[in-house]
Length: 119
Image: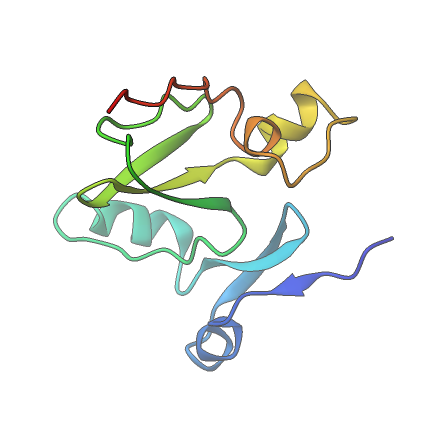
């Protein structure tokens, strides 16, 4: 059985009184006070989440003019020809457990290949 991993913010969350849950092999904060109370507060305020457990792909380069199409994830636009793709690792594992986990197609579902722009 693999060891439970902790996010970089684990000790800060622990000091703040978080209750933890196991999520895809990571121990992440589930709530700090009461889950229902925190959910109600979100209707009038904002929250910050530690997404260390998600698969992340940093995509940069010539020809990356539009967001990549990602199944079970999201592409965040960081600048000209720069995207960060975040993906649900459980969804990728359910689709294809035999594909090497370091490949983009496995990590984020199907990311279609694009033809390089002609010069």
